[in-house]
Image 1 (cartoon, rainbow, N blue to C red):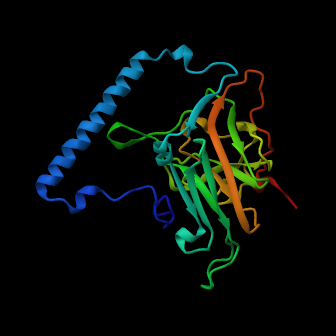
Image 2: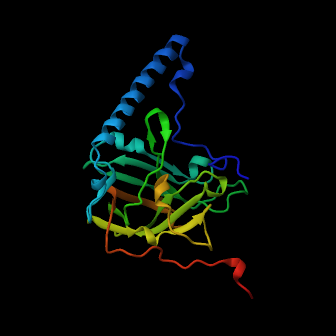
Image 3: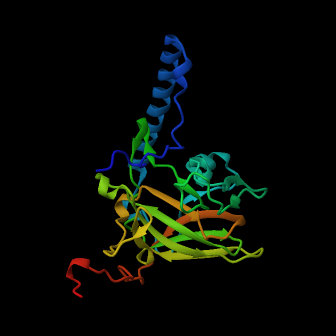
Length: 268
């Protein structure tokens, strides 16, 4: 049985509440301000639900952008950057900032040097991860990507191999660490790269280990999306991101690209 979703690691995107150092009247004012803000978000959600046409939720061969930077500093709040040094498990560094042209830049340094604690066996990783999607009054919900077949990115890389991660955290502790991966090969140089990845190509893993029993992504309960770098090559890295979106291709009929093995049925 697992005690918490993060397996003891601290959650970096949960900021301490402001009202801890406030007086009683300050807490009341802060509570009223938060209620007013969240109620406004709730009303906007109701208006959007009434305006939406279910038949226009997605269109063929058109990209529906989920995350875009475009000179918007608030877009950085939708992501959290982590690396091994955040947990005293290495010496890598990473940042996510806006470039001079308004795109997002994930950059830093991979360091494979191990800390001298006798516990850590592997080091040298950095990643960015989207914060959980929330509605009004801090309600955490999943992304529903069931209408789509492809993940689409417009990036400019450095020649390194990154990993795309789609997490489908479920209700039970056995599924808290379910993540689907796809290796992203980037090109170096000044040119933008258009990446179009079918969801059927993602492989299933749990706690960083590929599973023998493979299965497709449950696209109706996507909790987080992330990009990681752990290619065992020490040095600087830089990945520039314009947008991350979704696309539906009616000609894509593949449900899952990999075979699944039931270990209990294998006889030697």
